[in-house]
Length: 607
Image (cartoon, rainbow, N blue to C red; front, side, top):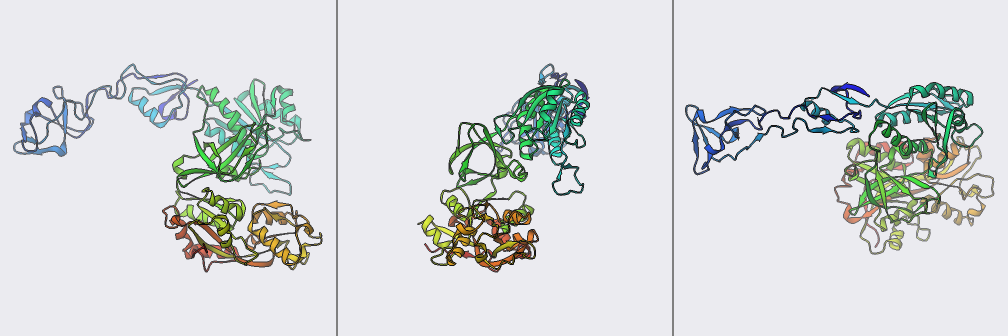
């Protein structure tokens, strides 16, 4: 425990209660600027029966002034008309104790103001000061020492060689500790050597309330955390029924709790929230933290392995008056899912997942008010949507465009089921050669829909720089010599590939890698850039993003499909304004492979 002046106490947890040593206010005080009167002297005053008070019948007061001894009401200055020689005229009677703050109205001397275990806020220290306190007794902030480990981990800003990773986890975990009201220390990276890890733990433990060892908690050749904790103290847990975060290590060494956080960032962040945050709260004597919850409908099917609780980050939006939740990418290393998440969905160990449209409970990471202006776009991936999300937020930080990449067919299905505002689509109908419109007649018959052109774009084979295999088109994919990376089923790009193969009397069976799927154009380009594939069908902008080669295949329209009633909605107005912007169109043109001449044009569906 430590005594701190009120000016330094915000964020600390009280170790002793705060009792009021004086009343607040300490006297009957005027609550308005005006005149202090005896209420009985004003009886009968009205609009048609004004009442005159002589100078000796009232006293002028300002807000906060002590009330004169024999006065029991205040008449606001705006309701006082001055007449002659200090006399005033009232046109309304005053009630007893009108506009008067009674002594102790806020708190009375001897009253409990703040209990033990309360985390002090700015308003709390103000109230304590008003009640006569100048200092408070608080618990010391827990000290959390974060020790990154791994031969491949390099300090932020250091040059990275192939296989190296920047030390972002210690930065994140230390910030989480500080956010939880702790003092955080980050140590230098420790190599994958059990002796050095043990030495770092021995040095940190005596001055820490919690030591977090990052990585080395699994069962690989260089994973030493569990063994080190067991050697230096007591190993309580190695592995929990939680996903992500299964390999977490929990124990104690040299009298200090130790957590071995998994090396993947999503796992590390989650294990801190589940295990470290409640421990740290208990050390301060504060209540265990929790999340506010809400009910939402899932925008797409969600599979989950049985046998462990599955913690999934989701984005939220409101569609048709209902909250909808879109699962984010679930890999334990997908750091962007931490950035974009609005809420957490926990699928219990006994469930295999949920179907699209199921109502689920989510734990909120953002206030619901913050997601009311979220535009929910589901369907085919396009880089313009990513660019639009950034541009909309730059124009108005209350507007969010949350896009989910489930393929064109998945987007239209979500629109049909009322799970999104916009469905991004570029589905080719092989029979007619038209895009998207024929699918609306099949999937959403009778619906009053609108289609808005986003752009025309170039689709082609993304290949290594210089096109070393000399690929000229889709026909070169057959024969098994080209390693291909495909898009997911239902994606318009995959439909285009199948159509082009069919035109050449071929099918996916002859394409090496046809079954390997990626969810976005950028993911396809990344696979080619990493030499995990020789080619993949995607947009020119994705190839340019990775400085790759490109073999044109087709020019296609990319459209946004929505309920017609939403076209003129306040929610979507910022998006339509953006699409009309010459500056935004220039940014899209700079991506490469886009034609924005029809951007924003309304297209009537053939229904």
